[in-house]
Amino acid sequence: MPRRWRRPLIGAAVVGALTLGAASGCTATRSGHGRIASAAGSSGGVATSRSTANPSGASSAASSPPAGARAGACPATYAAPDPNRPRVTLAFTVAPDLTHVSGTEHVVFTPDLPITELVFRLTANTAPTVAQGSSIHVASAVADHNAGPATFSAAGAAGQGGLLRIPFPGTVAAGTTVSTDVTFDLVLGAAGFDRFGRGQGYAWFASAQPLLAWQRGFGWHEEPMLQFSAESATSEAMQTDLTVTAPGADTVIMSGDPSSGSPNPDGSKSWHAGVTDARDVSVAVGPFSVSDTVVNGVALRVGAYSAAVRDALAPEFTRAITELSARFGPFPFPTLSVARLPANGGGIEYPSAILMMSSTRLVAVHETAHQWFYAMVGDSQALHAWLDEAFASFAEQLVNGDPPPASDLDAPGVVDTPTAAYGSGEDSYYFVTYSKGAAALHAARAAAGPDVFDAAVRCYVNANAWRIAEPADLARALAALPAALAVLTKAGALS
Image (cartoon, rainbow, N blue to C red; front, side, top):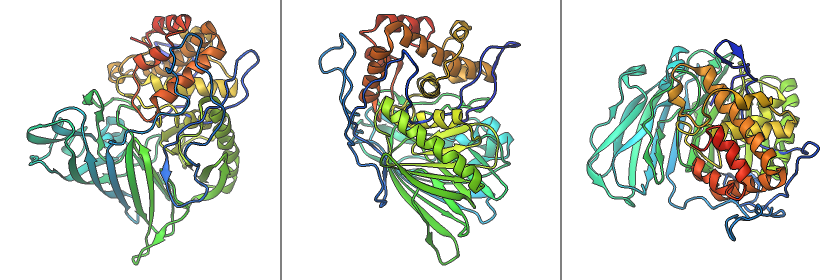
């Protein structure tokens, strides 16, 4: 989930500034831009023993549905997570020299459609990641229901490529619970702007486990791996139990970050957390300088490679949580853990956790906004990446009072383009998905009127919490706002 801090190009012309990361929070809106009331929400989140966890269902005033909306079409709170969502138990053990990680994964999964196989995405075998020296190798993969030997997509890193498949001898009926166990090894290469890396005594990894590639009502996502650094995964919100064992002198900052690790006889420490609704997880290990605060009931942990950097970042995330919550609803998780790493770039968002390779306000707000758009309201990052990237950029621009140039909306490109369709066209992907997508949302808001548009977006967020949203879901939320729909349709966002 990299977010690059640069100005993307189309052809040879500079056409706009790329907006980075997702940030949660809300700020006072610009003059003339309406602000809707905060609505109560049923939080998913991190199950920990920390008393500072944000209570589920924190109350605040509910926003009104847009004019003309059907009665009952706008939920007053976040939709509840699917009680049949997958359950995942993950364990990572980081080597003393931080060069590699061994992992185990146990998944309990009840598909809503018939299946003949299990499919997992091996994100660490994406070409740019492999070029940096990182990769994943699956040592074993077994499942019940008489599943056969695992197979892999076309040979790539470690000879296994990007997809792990575990076939069944026949069809497994919808509603049948399946269990699988996978062991794997992760090699961490050089530091860079990626979800995998190590350097200067730190290591980080995210999307490191084979990621269950299922979408309810859709089936398996088998889209090709990308030729550039971007998201291409689709995963349901899962009930996740996460344990990380790391060198005892280091601090671990991870999804569902606990306050401290438990010592082991060999001198290592084990860090454990449960995240009740996580599409994926991230982990950072190193001698972090850490601060812990509580922001509107959310336990905020910020770790950085120096106390000065930490202390500069913490207020930015406090602001992001506060202001985005006022705009879009209660923060989706009881905790947010931020790791500022000794690398350059932007930020990479994960449920209840953010990897930072920048210290700018723009990146902090953008990455926090992803806690609503991606972490809670999910999307297929392979097919409809704009639903999280454009919304995170839009949210960050509203909070920071920094709208995109109007010309971004007129640039070539269809906003709702599958990520792999860009081939090696990284600049075009980032511009169209982030910049043009955000410009389309701003133009739709202006066309419909800020108040009713903001209220409709709140309806969209509430209705699609903990699900994988489609462009049709957004169109449904905006059904009473034809002027907004016309703008988004013209930009190719609802195709």
